[in-house]
Length: 507
Image (cartoon, rainbow, N blue to C red; front, side, top):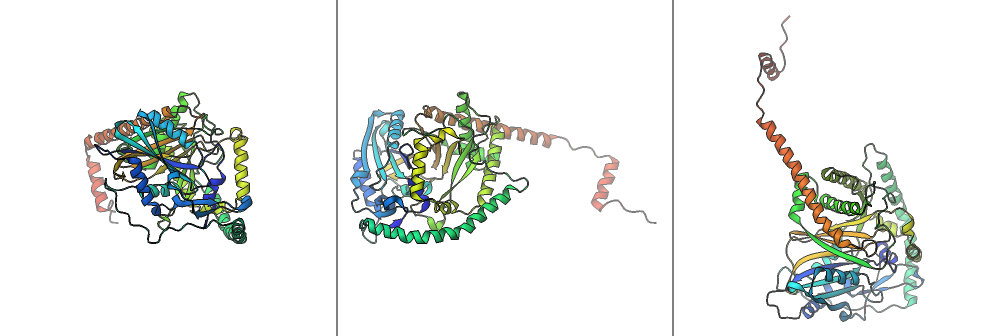
């Protein structure tokens, strides 16, 4: 048995009937030419043979009576692979719209908390000999980086699946503890936790002082404050239903803009998202005068945490500068905002969110989230932030699943109450694969929002190339300018400068 950390458990407490806290991915696979096998059976056999590489797949929750403590993970004695592996299809020849609608509906369904919190769908019927894999797993199990590590454990570097040796020790499920045992464990933790909280109080107080001191420094670029974001049509209470859209952008174009402007790939991604949202809201006549604010998750996973299936994340708020029309000025403002946010973030310890989560009582946190959702409180206050934008690095080389080549890996993330749009980006080979997940009512035309991303990148690239061309013309003009003629006085002065200045006359 293993107790959930406060941060992992918080994703359970935030879950409501309208706010589902699972993350997912949509993999697009290309079957080998002339394939005559049964892809579902092959994928299922591969997953079954690698379960020991994916510890999260066989663990289920054990809740504490009366919710007086965080739940426990136990190895599920009733684990049933057939329950988690699903075989479905879109009506052939399945097009992109059919697939997106299917994924949106699957993502709108909560996971069964009495079983391990994941599902795996093999989707056939797509045109061009392609197959899709849609996966979802609860956020209490993984974050973005550990989720990518989890999928890589199932993927191979070539069409021939690698030989994965069995575990050194056979898997043994846990005995399901009774309520008395769980309560006794919670009681011990109830003694230990207050001591741990008291130990962390000085560090938390010191963190607040450091952030406060930095705010008073002259010229400090402070990140946007929570609840200062402007209201938009997609900042509202959620419904249980979702819409989903995907796009792929050439990584070479993103890097070209980065090199031309001397910024980071993340700055370019934020600028592309900013241009996308600005165009979308402007078309609707809803573009606010104040800039939109994005929440950007940050991985704080160290080498020691590698391979651990849990959450190691923090977050920063960044201005998207959507109030600026000029593309170059906008990305410069975004870059300044990200630098300010990173500087403020450095003043806080990496485990800040995990420390704060110790102070949340499970029963209170879960009921507060449900009341917030039930009474649609998000409709009555300014947004904490407008949008979530995540950038997850992925492999730069091709991967395979059960002999099929992986073409794209689109993230499927989480909108939240008051934040009806989530844009998650993951690089893979030569592309940046983007997933837009949105509340069905807040963004009924999410496909159009995704279309605007390509226009946003094109406009940013044109502006960067034009700026570079102007700079090159100026440099060429300076280089071609004839050297000024030197008069006698100037020649004398130059000689004196070389000699160390004018000589003094002898007295």
